[in-house]
Length: 337
Image 1 (cartoon, rainbow, N blue to C red):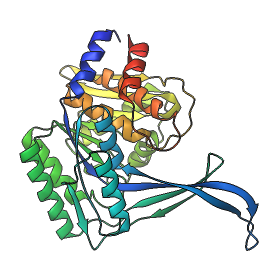
Image 2 (image 1 turned 90 degrees about the vertical axis):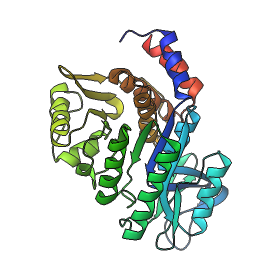
Image 3 (image 1 turned 135 degrees about the vertical axis):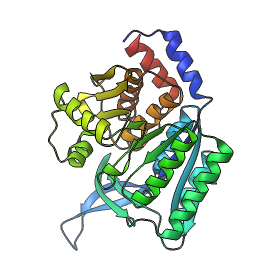
């Protein structure tokens, strides 16, 4: 890839003008940090003496946070509970300047929270408090109407579906909202999970990881074989009418396949060597950068290359953390020019 420093800088400046709507499962990532100095007399388990509690935005909310940290405007839409954890989530959004207009509260649901117990910089246990049943009819209708109103008033440049299998994105909701986006001419990026894998039809970008695409297609895929990856991508292009397929391959990098007027372009982009501390939230960062590139009408291979760099960058930090725009720009210039 031949690109200049000035071209990359212009692209990053373009991010500042973008509006990104993020729809999906939001959650609170709660970290309980302490020290282990003894074993419990009640059972052979370590006792963590709690020293610190940290709450962070997770799931689709972390995508919105990434979008904001990259200079764009994020419009977050989801359904949460009417509980204490909802108060924490809304407070976290307010503190980082994310608008809560698209957040719907329901007495019928709880707010997803992942509790991670950390000692000596290691995760010892995770406890998930969640509800993963699909939205009921009233909740679905409220979300669809909310998104419709925000599309009309905010006019987003791109929509991201961030699916964590927690019930906000049901097949019914997906069908209604993708149809709405198509009618409005808004490109759609999807970060899918297995449950609704085949429900995303006609979208612009489909971004599963290797495990998700293997499970979704019920097929083993060789991450180092471009032929194997091309076969999987071709199936998605034709069966679900998807324009671009980007598969994240962990230590093997990223694969991109995109429709062109005269056929398809496909490429494996190797991973950038990093000191990996934590892979949590890397997928959120990847789809955030990809969505901004879609809004900026970026070449698909460049989109994949930038997303690849961004995903590796956040893995150098412990815990879920958004991309640092300045660091990403510096790394992009270093790696791509």
